Length: 404
Image 1 (tube, one colour):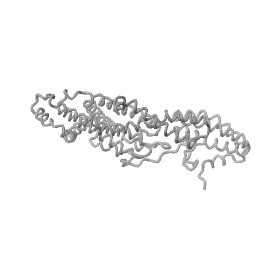
Image 2 (image 1 turned 180 degrees about the vertical axis):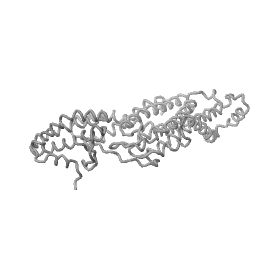
Image 3 (image 1 turned 45 degrees about the horizontal axis):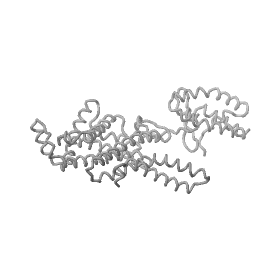
Image 4 (image 1 turned 90 degrees about the vertical axis):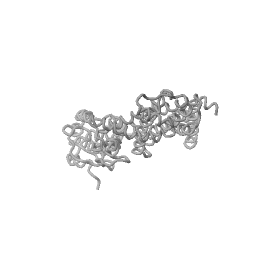
């Protein structure tokens, strides 16, 4: 235990690595096929496991240290390191998660999205309100964590705690809004922020109780001096800060109103959304973009360019189709009927390179460019169809019609 207190970060990394190896060995014991797999698997589990397990371990450490009593300065310094690591890792992991989870933070509930994308969990109009309240919470934390207790009168400490309460409120609302098995990793960062805030308040109260006899800072203003004197008893700080939080919130809302924010944006930020736990809106159905990249072009390009003609059905879901897509699919049918082996090779090539191309088409302009690139091939496909099919236009017309 003494060694852990002396080098807690090192031992936490070691513990995370050990857990990663154990999990990797258990997994490989059920999936082991070749001798080389076990070594590579263990090495991979060390890397991936640390990446996945360490955030949870940091959360557990922060929870445990919240209830630990220690006045050892070295121990408190190490605890601060865990706090900073949790915030840095949390910010980094949240950024990675947001990239891969398909959350469109620029898209309000009225915007039609594609495939598995989801709308923003925060109403975009209220971003200034949410960011401002979060910043107030961060400022409150920095004041308590970075300024020595001897240099702060109780009124400043209580004001900082009140600011942290506003940040905690935003964290709680975020967790409630997105909480689900799919987004559990995105809850870790705000959860750690809440734990760190509670820990900072607790440590600051303990520090004040041990040094309050040496603290004599006050105010020249008699009213502020009176309030400051009433707050000498640190046991009342959490409750006093909660009361003080409301006038601070009112002042912030009034200031934000001068910049165009509505007073109720603090609530609408979470309710004027869809797809989430606190949402009160129902978004339009997502448009399905098939991995077939011509489907992506048909659905994603400017209508005056790609000329979509109707909705079709592919693999059980609706897609937007245009003539280029119908011609290409009719041509593929001809290949499958007349030269199946050649069609199989073409299909493999198309699947191999078509999917990566589809994933790069994220704008209407890119879809328009691909449409023009495919135009010569469309003409070639059409020539083949007219040479090989008795009723080519009939074949083209029935592509992607729903199966009865």
